[in-house]
Amino acid sequence: MKTESTETQIDTEFLKTLSVLYVEDDEEIRELLSRFLRRWVGTLHTAVNGEEGAQAFHEYHPDVVVTDIKMPVMDGLEMASAIKSTSREVPIIVITAYSERDYFIRAIEIGVDQYVTKPVNTDILLQAIHKSARHRFHKRDMEKAEKLVIDSLEQTIGVLSRAIEMRDPYTDGHQKRVALLATAIAEEMNMPPSIITGIRLGSLVHDVGKIRVPSEILSCPRKLSKTEMDIIRTHLEAGYEILEGATFPWPVARMVVEHHERMDGSGYPKGLKGEEICMEARIIGVADVVEAMTSYRPYRPALGIDAAVEEIRKGRGTLYDPQVVDCCIHVLEKADFKFWD
Ligand SMILES: [Fe+2]
Ligand SMILES: [Fe+2]
Image 1: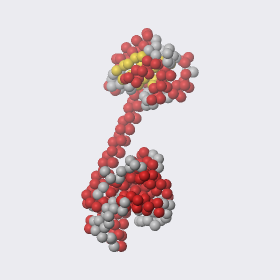
Image 2: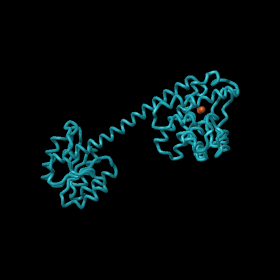
Image 3: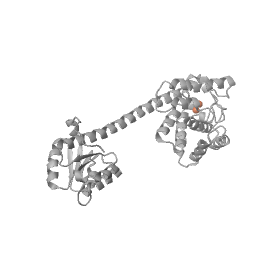
Image 4: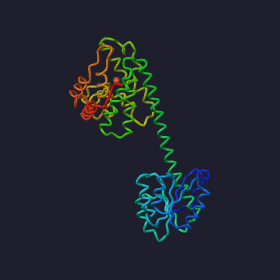
C-alpha cells in the first residue's frame, strides 16, 4: 500500500478516459467530492455503502475504486476484500481519518493499493487515482505486448514449418501431429503453460533441418542405405544451425538438435544420456517415434498405434524417459485424443 505523494505529474487526458467508482456514506462529502471528481475523470459512479459499492462494481467494472472505510451495512474494507477476491488487479484507494489507522493492517492484507487521509486534499486524491490507473494499464499493456511477441514468434515458426513440409510431402503434417501429441504429453505431465507453448513450437520445427537433405532421399520409396541414413541424420545439426541465431524465450534449437538423443546414450548426433537431454526434447522424441510409426512412409505402410505403444513401452527407461512414456500412453488411451483430423 502506497503512502500519499504529491510528486506525480497528472495527465488530464488520461484521467478523462477513466471510470471511477466512489463509495461514501456521508452525503455532504459524497456530493462535494463527486462534483470535484466529475470534472476530472471520464465516468463517475457513486454508492452510499459497501454493499451498494460491490454491486456497482460488478455492474460497471470501473478502472479504479475510491472508498471511505467506516460505513453502515458493509464497510469499505469488507467491500474491498469482496472486490479483490474476484478482480485482484483493480486498484482500490481508501480514504481514511488518522484515527482509523488501526484499519491499515487489514487494508494491507486485503491488498488495498493506496490511502488518502481525511480531510481530503483533492490534488492528492487525483494523483492517487492517476498513479493507480497508470500502474494498472501499464501492466495490462505489458501483458498485451508480451502476447503480441509470442503470437508473432508462433507465426514465424508456422511459416518455417510449412516451408519444410512443402518440400517433403511424405512428412506433410508430421510436425503438426508431433506438436499435437507432444503438447498433450506435456499437459499430462502438468508442465507450466509457458513451457508447453515452447514444446509446441519446438515440435512444429523439429525437422526443419531436413531442408538440407536432398528430396530424393526424403521421398525414397525403399529402405535407405547407411550413407543415405547418415545424410538424413544431418537434419539435427542443420536444424540447430538454422535456429541457434534466433532468440526465443524457449530452448527451441536444443529441442531440435536433441530430439533423436536417447536416454541410454544410443541416440544421435551427440549420444547424450538421461538428463543431459532437455526434457522438451525427450517429450518431442517420444511423440516423434509414435507419430512416425502410425504414419505411412514411402518405404512401408503405417504400423498402427498398438505397434507404436509397444515400441515406447519396450524402450521405457532405456531409450525413452519413463515419465514421458507413461504420460504418452495415458494420452493415447484417452478417447478424446485424435492424431488425425
Ligand atoms: Fe527428426
Ligand atoms: Fe520428426
